[in-house]
Length: 203
Image 1 (tube, helix red, strand yellow):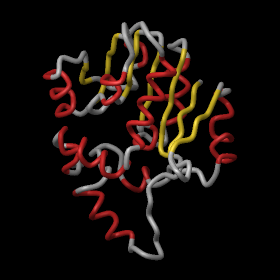
Image 2 (cartoon, helix red, strand yellow):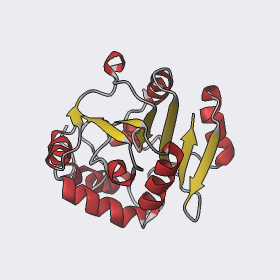
Image 3 (cartoon, one colour):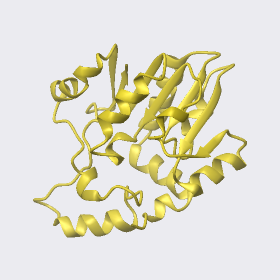
Image 4 (cartoon, rainbow, N blue to C red):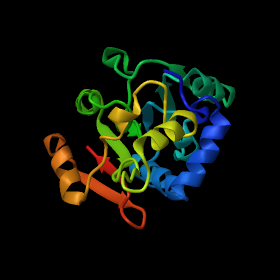
């Protein structure tokens, strides 16, 4: 399965994210960096273009894993310690103080809870952040086939998990999200955006 244009070029991906998120990403990473604090060993799984690394506080080290070779190569050119690795290779996880999973879960359905469970066992603190509202598809306004074509060429198509799986992600309200995270005993859930469309969960 081929990925969309946004996953072929790191710069294109960064531009599209900045347009779609309308500034929420910066608020998200600033908040995550605040939660992590100083002098911590940070491991980000499914790190993409490693936005988070630019926001970390003094004394923090950073390791990222991602399957996208284009993203990994771009991160390495920036001097970051990022590797092309499968995030489900749990036994290879490096020593860390904090694991961050940012906008990954909706890409790995139905293995999303497995990743949370395994990551939590391998860290002192797990930070998970995702869009609460999921993919914005309105079947009454746009035929699914049209949405599928957009996703294939310009959308969130990573070339791994098909749209039919990714579109299952999303929570109608805070109560539904709390129910999803209940088994992981979240210490805190922070909502971002005017309509609470993003969340950060500290597990």
